[in-house]
View 1 (cartoon, one colour):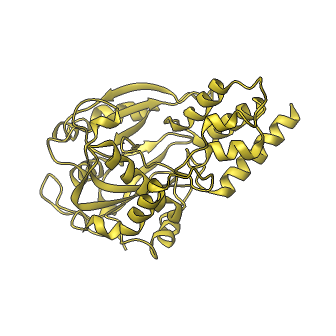
View 2 (cartoon, one colour; view 1 turned 180 degrees about the vertical axis):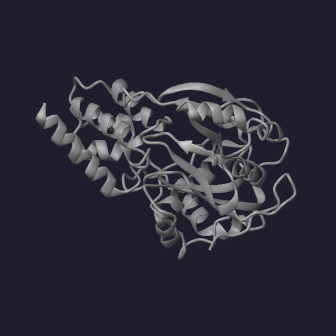
Length: 324
């Protein structure tokens, strides 16, 4: 059922399905941010000739939320030129993309790729309370749970715990790995220009639906258990394989610095993560690493959150390498 949203800035109440793109944009910003919050905005023009290129950043700024709501025409023009429009889920304390710039989280989020809202509901219905906001990203669904009280991530250990909690939650949701506190997601009210342009818009928004952080205690406890486990286990996605141990199994000619660099690219924002993941696995195979060690190295990164995705990507890479 489509929920009525909050009063938007002009003082009227409209159901989501009757809101235009600009009204959705305003309502979304006002639901997630306080007027003085610094919001990271990024417009990226995709490079359609090179799948490994994340695209060209044509705009990057950190306006206050009150200023951002006036920038719809500028962002709309960039979007019409083919740029994808992204925002930082959490407000920044200062104008930076570094994690230190995020000290509080007012919302929890999840990114379900290639999924409808009906499919998404089947995933969260038995695990989680109803999301405060549901966004159709154009090729998937973004879920947001507004928190009653902000969660402090000012200290590295607090940030690590929240990210680990989200990662544990994503395993139950079969969601993409987007737990970093500096995460950028698509802004509703614009077109998703990843392939053929399709609208990114709000499907449900209820600004009065807020949740205590304690509702997510189960995943917090899982994060605590994993972070406190001093044994580096390949079965735990939050504990990547130590590179030092790889020296025992890779050939003497293997370039460990190259391996580190390839794995690090999985932490970057790109237009098409699936194609990037495939490219990285192919390059890792070229180093001489066996498939099982590659899958342990990439576990928990990018979209490697399920065994099935990892196995499929590896098989496709092996097939491609065989053909060359």
